[in-house]
Amino acid sequence: ASDLIFVFDNASICTNYSGGGPAVLALSFKVGEAWASMARNGKPGHSGLPEWPAYNEKTRATMVFDTPCTVWNDPEGEGLRLIRQSA
Image (cartoon, rainbow, N blue to C red; front, side):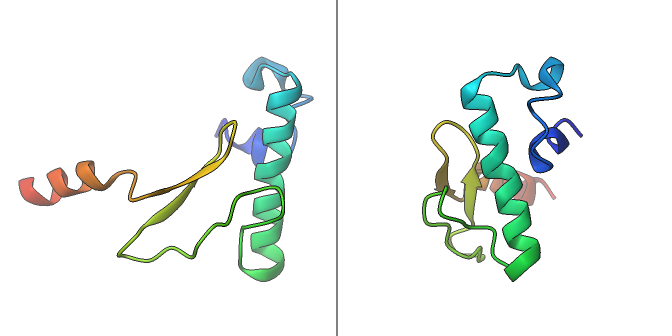
């Protein structure tokens, strides 16, 4: 649940979890805006993020919220393949 301080853009009042500082506050804003954008129009992308393609089974485009935020294709692919093989 530690992500909730970012989801609701509360990193500034929960510095014991977030660490505070300008980079953390900027990241908190980006995460909060992504959730709000998703609620407003069904798409989490916004002007503060790089282009965020729709998720699909082929590319599995996933936004990695960090400094800077980036889109990774299939970031857990190898782990998912191992799980499927062991089943």
